[in-house]
Length: 556
Image (tube, rainbow, N blue to C red; front, side, top):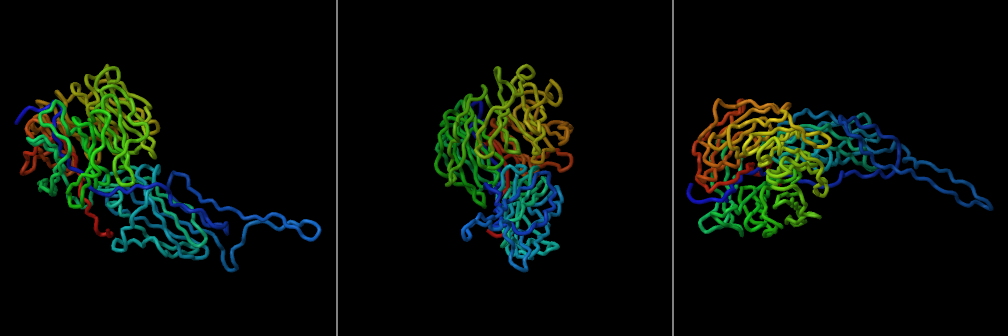
């Protein structure tokens, strides 16, 4: 240990995922321009009800004839002679799930009684159909037919659309993905066709990584530092960016939280001493630049969480929850009603992967445990819904929280008692302890906790014991030791752990000896082995990991 450090440390390292998550509102469905003949129904594998476009019938009223009134025949306008009329329909071939690629292949047939050429609108959803955004076409180089001037036929014309999920959703692992296709021709838009919900594993995309470090230098300034990380875990320096905060040796660290937006092109840091957040842009090469200055918080921010859509940022300050969105220029702005009063002593903070719930961990007092806040997906505004009290069962619960990528289980670290595991209700998001009353003992004072990207491994650090690894059964949350004994080469007071998107490496930062350590993860056993060149002396405190934007095949 090179000098006195505060209880919560003052340094951060961030390894982060850089891949695009372009989100937007709207379904892209247009109403038909006339009712015409009946179009064939779309054969869609989906439990969701089809979304229909309105086809308004055109009727006429009465008109005077001579000395009286005679009714003018009313009804549907007929199509021109020789045309059947009617909008085109899309019949989807079920997506072969899970999709283990950054490119998602969607085969479909385009049917139209008049064989009119059609355009295709394709949307994707990462939250089981709650919100939709335009899907990027991977292009002809990947076998996609595109979206313009597509042939149709009365019996159906086959086509293929290839979604560039690596660009839109990032180098990511998502369990609630859908695609929606809508065809339009001269007769209007047809009924949208949706895939069933499928699991997307896009972690096999190009795997250059960036690590963002927040050292505390002797002058007192916090500076995020960017690195690239090789496939073997080696670090290469990229750039450094100063911030407006600092304070080495403070009782509370200046840099107190850091998250990467799901798209991977921006990082948000919280600064405890100076009570503000900083936003950094991350370039495709991994360099950093401060965006729009900083934004003040009403108190000292601690942990940060980012919404799965990337549209909202959450932090805790005292007994309050503060929430932020982004304006048109990409600058952080407080959400309406922020800050929100929540339970005492909040610490752990994590969003549900479906984007409709936020979980807060509370370490002390009558609120000790985990609170569930339902989120409005459109506005990001939280509302307290339920709580899992742990004060009688634990000692200091809620220090760190993690949720598996399928949204089935929440893991809650108790500093003294170990690990609580709770199941998540699929409708209400309410929490119920899985293993009964007692937490799983970890052997001492627990410090750090993280789940792997796929949710099939869990790692924790325990003071005086070392680094523990477990295999996780995704269906039951059952834990099995990944190695015969804890790793002791982990450094003192290792609070922050993070795996990369492909679960190749675990990154661990130590507050006491200023190091970043890198461990290779065995793909089968999940056991850890420290890589060559580790540890690296880097004033390290926190870590978050992810890849660079490296998806040029489909164009800019």
